[in-house]
Figure 1 (cartoon, rainbow, N blue to C red):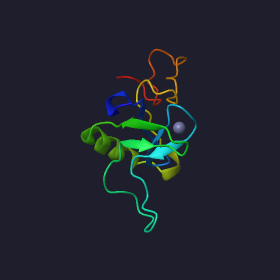
Figure 2 (tube, protein in one colour):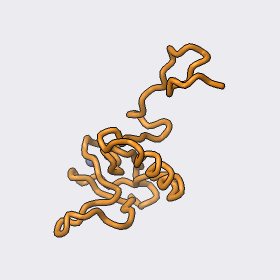
Figure 3 (cartoon, rainbow, N blue to C red):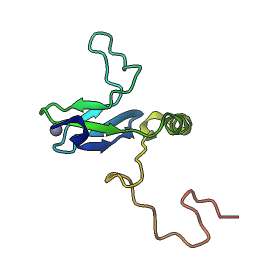
Length: 111
Ligand SMILES: [Zn+2]
């Protein structure tokens, strides 16, 4: 299998860490894996990874610009609520569909 045929997985933010679930099993990999000696996250993205079960896959990350915007938004929240999923991700919460038409999901009335 060439690199071009690798299955891919969309990265998401979980507990303030970028991760992606293996497309073939339940393992997840960090986009910025921790160095085993220092315990510090990698300073660079690692987008081609192999899970604990040996499945190789490619991680799809938001652009660096979008990642920075997401990080800025998340920095305003307490760490336990720093979660973000891309559109179409299976773990992305469904938008609330029972709101009155004049109310946005944030609870603010639309002007
Ligand atoms: Zn796997």
